[in-house]
Image (cartoon, rainbow, N blue to C red):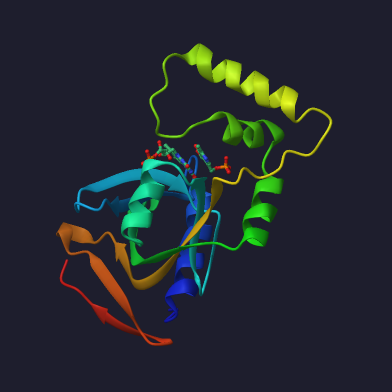
Length: 192
Ligand SMILES: Cc1cc2nc3c(=O)[nH]c(=O)nc-3n(C[C@H](O)[C@H](O)[C@H](O)COP(=O)(O)O)c2cc1C
């Protein structure tokens, strides 16, 4: 059994990719605003390694405002088909421009244009307004690569703790908690 939590996470994600009907990389992201009001929403995990877990979003969104006010987050993966969850907590930072540019360039052209068209989390008067904005940016970037919007980037959650939960009989589940101490991880168990 793996004792490095990042390796163990990679193994579980591969198993989820084989068994989940869609979006095995979907993860609930919890943040809090300056008043401590929590909020949670789904994002897609687009990378992970020893430095953290990366997702991409609009930097004028509610989640981005929260992360500016309080750069800490919790992530929750739940793979129903495997009856497993992984909880991650840590501090959050914006990825470097080269990383964000590379990921943005890998997206479909329409998704790139959508990132320009959407004032994510702001009130939208009607669907026609969004369609008109999509048409406008489609014209603006005709015959050229769509650049990454200045307000669109990735966030890295650098984990301080990672818990692996596995379903057990009679609610006697297995919980392995990894806690970062400097450069090292310590491991313990929790009662279910
Ligand atoms: C499965 C799933 C994956 C999603 N992935 C993302 C994502 O990677 N980035 C993103 O900005 N929004 C994503 N969304 C939309 C968010 O859940 C959310 O509606 C949006 O980001 C606005 O959140 P906010 O107002 O808290 O900033 C996803 C939604 C679902 C259901």
